[in-house]
Image 1 (cartoon, rainbow, N blue to C red):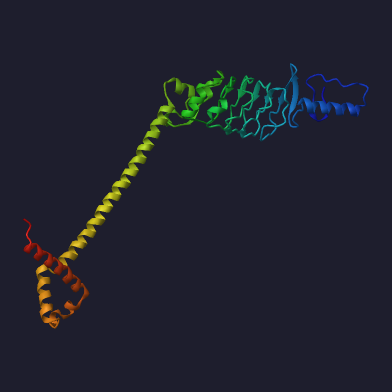
Image 2 (spheres, helix red, strand yellow; image 1 turned 90 degrees about the vertical axis):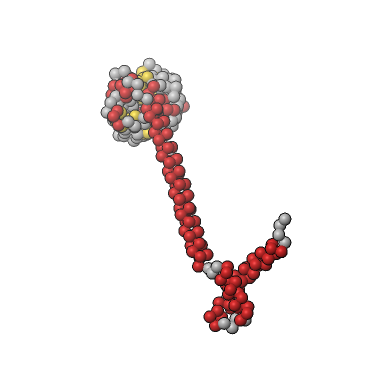
Length: 304
């Protein structure tokens, strides 16, 4: 029985004939709400073996309708503009067996997209979309026959692990091709053909990771060596300047002669007058005097 607004009853609902028409329609709507058999406004619903087939193909939809009948057994969503399958998109459809999402613009499939239908789903069509990769968790425990053909797949380790666990549609399996690949020579080739030839994308992934680690370590090593070289050169320059400064200082004999000259002349000798009165010379004299005193003590008290 079909009701205004596209709603229908896929199972018999008893409505007494003695009630006025308006009340009968109201009771039907209440029954539909309670039983969860309301058909989405933009879709067409029909019955199959007491369950509901929801036809939403070519309806210009941009997302999966949230108000699907609870007893949906087949959901047709092909040829729309859907871009994503979110988590738990079909969680309230325990009877769902057929799901057609082909010819959309799907790029993203969340890890929990098919949660709730993993046991019931028997056929899943995701062909002719824009998917390049898919998380391993998305198809976990899924027993459906799956079509993934005509998507721009990027062939790498994760995709390899996903495909090995799936039951791919044998009629379209050769149309699941590498649009791009971690190894460019396999671009454009069927994925199953590449994998059957013994290629392991995961091994290549590990090699790429090892190379990246080596390059990183080499970079750090180069930085350390460069710092050591800079440090040594910088200290050599400081040492050179220090040696040049020491060479410019008067020798010990010269300092002693000047010291005697200043002491005897009381600073009255004109050639050395400024030098005798300078603070640097006084400091040098003090240091040299201590050295001379120490040397004299060592001479008087030789070590036995």
